[in-house]
Image 1 (cartoon, rainbow, N blue to C red):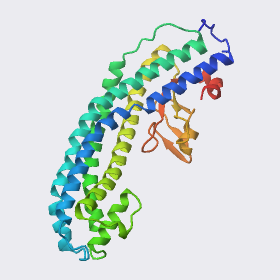
Image 2: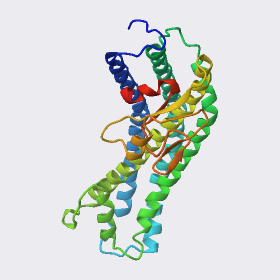
Image 3: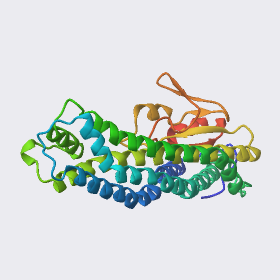
Image 4: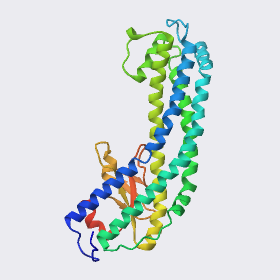
Length: 314
């Protein structure tokens, strides 16, 4: 791209190229958690297998017409102890993945922000000089905030998942037969009728599959939310550095716009806020990304004098 003179209005072709670049960066940032999610798949598969084995040991030889009593609930929990142990072991794996790959994702988000800011400065200001920014320092500053959150959320996930299994079973006490409970739990994996009831191993596998789907979604939601928050925090430290290059910088909210983008994030996308300020949408205020669990948005560096181009690149 030719060097632009400061104050010159970019052409439509230049703005369109920049819009595509912003879109590419937004998509790459939104996909940063996928590596962590993929690493958790075999770990959660082990939990599913252990849950199936434990359920089978409980259901094998059990009369399905019997009522699900407090006594039977206690017996079920005893058989499922190995499943609970497997669930709690996920905490360590989740912490490790977040503290390593999660910080790597945050670092990449900062690198993408710097690249994008360089393009903004080139197109809107005609400046091509290298940026003086220490990405590693921004990540180190961000790590002090995000690592405690990673640890707390990993522990919370394990405890809540174990509690989820206990609550699902306890819901049938005094209200269901063993068969009723089996049918209810199997339906976590999809439609199921009593005519499809089978031997203990078959039922245990289906129940474990439904539980794994439920817990897998929660794990993915946690990872996406935590990585988005880590990227936002580390990016804010990078923007502080970039402000030394161009005083007056603000933060710009950028949503990964597609059919999955929620109404709140559509309103937030393109909004700007001072460093340390808040964003506003749907009667709520937000300190920054994420606005909600599973958020795929990001923040970037922006200067108010570029506001007339917001609609062209957003």
